[in-house]
Each structure stands twice: as C-alpha cells, then as structure tokens.
Amino acid sequence: MTESSTGHASEGPLRVAIVGVGPKGTFALERLLDHAATALGSARLHIDLFEASPVPGAGPVYDPRQPAYLRMNFAAEQLDMWWPAGGVIPVGERLAFPEWLARTERDARGDAYAPRAQVGAYLAEGFASVLRHCPSNVEIALHRANVTRVRRDEHGWSVEAGGEVRVGQSRYEEILLATGHERGSESGFGQAWPHVAPLIPAVFPVQRWLSRERLAPGARIAVRGFALTFLDAALALTEGRGGRFVKLAHPYRLRYEPSAEQAGLILPFSRSGRPMLAKPDPSMVAALPALEEIAESGRRRLLRLDEIDVEAHLLPVLATTAASSLLVADHRRAGDERQVQLTSQILARLRSVVRGARFAQTGDAVGEIERSLAIGCGNRGPDEAWALGHIWRALYPALVTRLSGHPLAPEEWPAFHRLAREMERLAFGPSPLNAAKLLALIDAGVVDLRHVSEGRLESSRDWTSVRSEMGSDAVDAVLDAVLPAPGTGEGGLARALVEGGHARVLDGGRGLEVLYDGSCIGGEGEVTPGLAAIGRATEDSVIGNDTLSRTLHPLADHWARRVVSRAHDAGAPASNVSAASGAVA
Ligand SMILES: Cc1cc2nc3c(=O)[nH]c(=O)nc-3n(C[C@H](O)[C@H](O)[C@H](O)COP(=O)(O)OP(=O)(O)OC[C@H]3O[C@@H](n4cnc5c(N)ncnc54)[C@H](O)[C@@H]3O)c2cc1C
View 1 (cartoon, protein in one colour):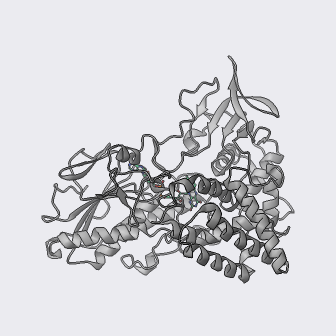
View 2 (cartoon, rainbow, N blue to C red):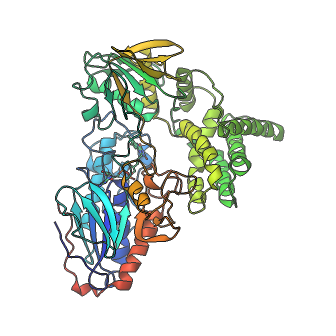
View 3 (cartoon, rainbow, N blue to C red):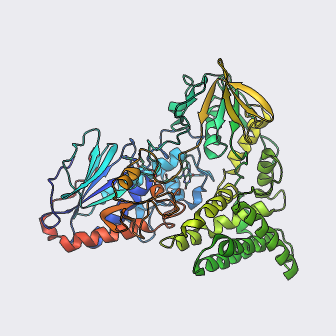
C-alpha cells in the first residue's frame, strides 16, 4: 500500500480520493489519468481509491462471481467502457465489449444480453488496464475498505474507513464520491417488521439472500416489487435451483421444467401491478431509417427548448415524435389528419400520466408482456406503448443533455417523475429472453400474479399472508425486491455530507445538487471546494445515472480536467516524481 504524508498542494502531489470504484469510479479514474498524462511534467497527483467490494471496476452489480442467468438489460453490442477520445490506454486494450468477448474467446458468439458476470470480468480487466498505464506523474493506492464517513477540517478532506486504512492519516484536496448503489441506504420497508413470516431484505447478491438455507425448497414467497429485480429473484429461485427453460417451436415462447429445489410459489405484489415491457429486437428499428430521422428531429427540438414545463413543452415533443414513429413503423401513410389525430391521442394519454393516472391498460400484466414480445419480434404491428418506449430510448440522451446544468423548476419534478416512471416501464424493461422466461414461469404456475396489483401483507398470530381483492395466500417468507431510490439515502455518505452542510439536495429533486463537473453545492449555495459526486447520488441534478454508457454523462471528464488543472497550477517538475505505484492491495 502506498502511504504518503499529509501534504499541501505546493509541497507535493495534489492528493485525490475516489470513494467507490465500481464502473463510474473507474471511468473517472481513467479520465483523470488521461488528463494527467497530457499535463505530464507540470502536474503531479496522488490518488487513493476506496472500494468496499472485492472486484474493483465491476463492483457488486457486475460481480463476476454471480450466476450467469443474471443478465444485462442493455444490449451487449452497445457496451463500451472506454471514453471515445482517451489516449492513456493503448488502442489494443481499449476494446468495446463485443471485441473483448471475441478476443478473450470466452464466448465468441456473444449473447444479445450478456450475463452481468461476464460484463464484470470485462470491467475488472479494464480497471487493471487503467492501473497498468498510470502515467509517471501519478501514483495510485487502492484501499479495499468501506468508507463510513467523509470529513472536512482546516487541513482538507479526510475519510474514515474500515479494513487496513488508518483513520485520519491522510488529507485530500479533492474527493470524488462515486458510490452508486450505496449500501446502508435501505428502503425502510423492513423497519420494525410487524409480520410473522421472516423478511429477506434484499435480492443481491442472490447467493447470499436467496440461498436454500434462507428460502427452503418449496417455500411460498411473497415478493415486494414487480420490476427487473423481481425478475432476477424469480430466476434465482427457479433456474438458479436447477429448473430449465426449453425452447418451443415459437418465436419467443418457452416452457419451464421445474426442479425439486425450486421455490414452491412466488407471489409478487406491487402498487400498480404494471409490468415492464420487453425490449424489442433492435433490427425492427434498424430496418426503418426514417425512424432515426424522426428521432433526430425530436432530439433537436428537445435541445432547443429554452425552458421545460413538462406539460406545456416536453409532452408535445414526445407526442409528435411518438405519433410520427408509430405511423412509420406501422407502415401507415402519415397524412396530416391522421398525424394530428394520433398526436392528440398520445398527448392526452401522456397528460393523464403526468397528472397521476396510469397509462391506459391494454390488458392484464401477462397480456401486456406477451404483446410487447410479439411486437418486438415483428409478429404483431406496433402500438402506442411501443412508440413511447422507442422514443424515450431514442430521445433520452438529448433529455439528459438538456436537463444537465439546467434542471427543472422545483414544482415540475413531481410531474417529471411520474412521466419518467411510466416511460421507463415502457422503454427500459427486460430483454426478450427474460420476459419470455417470466411468461413460462407464470404458465408453469410457479409465479402467480393474483396479487400483483395492490396486494398487501397481513399477519394473524400464526402466519403472514398476501391479500388483494383476488383473495389471500399464506406465505413462508417475504422478499423485498425493490431497490432503494436514488439520491441521498438514509445512512449513506451523501446524506451525511448534506447534514454537515457540505452539500445540498437539488430543490424539488432527490439527489445532490452538482455542477457540470460534479462539484457539490453546499448548504449556503456556494460551491464546496474539493468535493464532487457522480452517479446515483446526484439523481435529478443529473438524470439517468443507472447506466454503463460512457458518453451520456461527461461530468467525470470535466471533473478530471478541473482536478488536473489544479494540480498543474500547484505542481512541481515531473523529475521529482518516483514511478507510479500501480495497484496495491
Ligand atoms: C441489479 C442491477 C442490474 C443493472 N443492470 C444494468 C444493465 O443491464 N445495464 C445498465 O446500463 N445498467 C444497469 N444497472 C444500473 C447500474 O447502476 C449501472 O450500470 C452501474 O452499476 C453504475 O455504476 P456506479 O459505479 O455508479 O455504481 P455501482 O455499480 O453501484 O458502483 C459503486 C461502487 O462504489 C462502492 N461503494 C459504495 N459505497 C462505498 C463506500 N462507502 N466505501 C467504499 N466503496 C463504496 C461499491 O462497492 C461499488 O463498487 C443495473 C443496476 C442494478 C442494481
């Protein structure tokens, strides 16, 4: 482990700490090294990395040790961990995920939606590559430790961490929070648990929480939540226990063959009961170049908006773009009248969503999933739900750019959140394979949707049951499959920084208020020197943080540029610097 004494910028290298070295912490490190390499000779940096999980780069979400049935919901062909213009890593090591797969020969064919474990191996290798190419004016120390507190005093920033790291030893001029899905920021669902059946408080890691010891074969399990985490839990309790999915002579339908070890019955319950729709096959959009032209025009309109009132400005762009896309995808002749009619129909639906209504139901949950699969593989003509999902995916980068640094007025956030929740359901759902697996589990009677809409738990003296207007079913355990919301969760580092006045939550939003380079705004409205955050803790100040996309959010690049220029201003000649330390456990 590299240790260095407390130092002022003028005496030695600029001292930087990155807390959390999952994907985004790694991306920020790569940007920092790249800018430092360009400034070689005039900027010196010492970087301490703090990472709680055993696999830096991958972090828990992409832990390479997790089972292969836990897959991405982001097509493998779009995955590339490298910044487009980076130079510090040699081109031969800056491989996009599909090239990396082919090169490593792990699976030269690749899958449209890869196992997260495989993506984790790619990210971990990328992290090692970043360390290997650390320029000579930078030294790096990796601390495998959970940071429990970030503090500031007259000497600078310091962190408190367990493991090997001695508290208060080091002071930093710059600290970056990249803690993503922070532990400790729990949903609060299980606090003061009143039920007889035990609560399993989380799904991940499935090896820990969904083991046979916790959930015995044959157990009847109520599951809170019906989104992607529910799907992973259902797979862990069936396929992960030896069940098998068999292909049928059908474009997407599967049959499930049970195992003796699997859960007896899985009963999801959620507020809305609405399913996430299956992603369509990308070939559908690729075959119609006019869709990209329509999307491009929608993106331009979004970027040109001076202000965003959700109902007055955003919805009309979405509605016209969706209507045009639907007419093209459905091979219907546009015609002014048809276009106007469809636009106003979609606009009315979107308005009712932002005012709190649910998107008009096209069927029950099974019917909606089935329909999205049929549309996605071309077996059925597209519908409004497809069009809205498509345009949300296609316009999202422009929305992220437009809102970055120019957030909504505080009173607009509730409407935006209602809209985003519904659009994400239509746009960012499971892969077709996972949606087909869910249908097969429902067909086999292992997953039962009886209580999925507005189900609730109740306990008598002897047992717990899940109840809805469809009746009541006793369960052996309750599983929480809802991830804590993004932002400054209870018990997390970001919350403590807010409480200490070093940061504040965006007015009307959920996450820390940050500038274009991640710099945090303090309680008094001033920029807090040396404190920055990227990722989930900044949600709303920056939108759409839950992604591996390198290009969607340029904050880490701007942050790295600023930090290196600070090191440059304070730096001594590079000849004073010993070789980089690289990765040290
Ligand atoms: C189950 C699941 C599946 C997902 N699937 C996809 C997908 O298919 N496609 C996609 O684009 N996105 C997906 N996401 C979204 C995901 O948020 C991002 O892809 C990505 O993980 C974000 O990276 P991050 O570094 O910001 O956060 P994280 O991946 O959460 O990494 C944060 C890192 O910080 C570390 N850390 C946190 N707190 C501390 C602390 N106090 N001290 C030290 N270290 C700390 C953690 O150990 C972790 O390594 C998924 C998310 C989840 C939860």
